[in-house]
Image 1 (cartoon, rainbow, N blue to C red):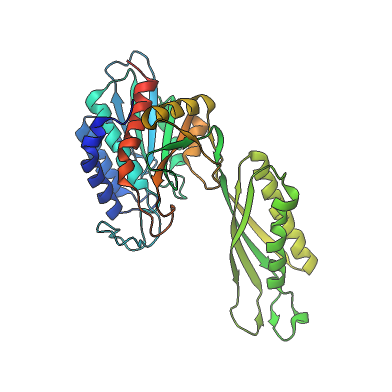
Image 2: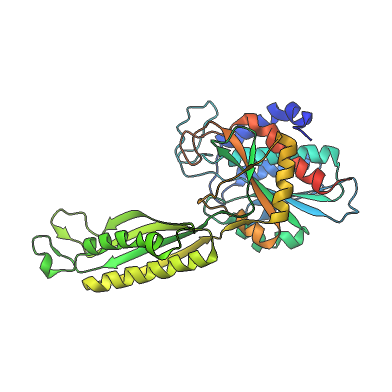
Length: 386
């Protein structure tokens, strides 16, 4: 099953949808326009059922095959939300919303799944039911978690679920995947280091939190270098350092540091949290200060299921002639929540030589639309053959 001719025919139409969504980006759960557009098109395609408001602004469409005797139900998921980034592409269809941009290609994901839904509703060349899932708030809001918490899996009887993300730097229209842990857990921390303010000329009268915080920042790097097994994946990054005073001659009362932790296992995730709390508390005590540590668990590790991963790779090989082994990705992906509830797999489709995702000059490559649509359609037709 190479790229389907129907998607070559639909390419101008799908591209038009994609560029319209690109020009009107919406952040987190505020995907009201995009969700309405998706629901309208699913109804026009003749989906058997279209449900809105799942996971706040998520949309689900149900497409029954020529037969449903197999009893199989497969979910296909795309994300819809944009990022709070000012676009710098200069495209004629660039974002019309200040401070918001489709800098991760979710406009492309949504459009490719819509294209696949149109084809599947036209042909229904499968024995079972396809559930197309359009999710808000992947970028930090946990929209996948919210849709699952709304009972989506049980409500629609989903047995397996599949997702896809475009990937710059991978040849356009090719695929890559790996079984097991794939995308990292994404925890956050905010630590207030409390000392005692003083005049900068009399540091002995105070407890300098800038010195405490500097030691803490350096000590946190020992978690990866001295506490973690070198063969395990762990990143601890301090990304913000803010004092309670910005005067030249004042030792501040406190310093707040923020950052993120990325891990690929539950054990390493627990170790990182434990060591961060211990390091901050004991380092500050050694200076006579104290630490208020707020550790905020984020998305879990996204784990591909082995059987479904091999199936997804087989479909990719049938579309593109091959499927590479993907690297571990220390970024996060809240499709992890869906894979915790049901077996499934997540695949990367190459976006070609473009700026990396989350960059103000990134743009989704419309040339990969037929390959992405064909993979979605192949998942349905090959997992539930007539």
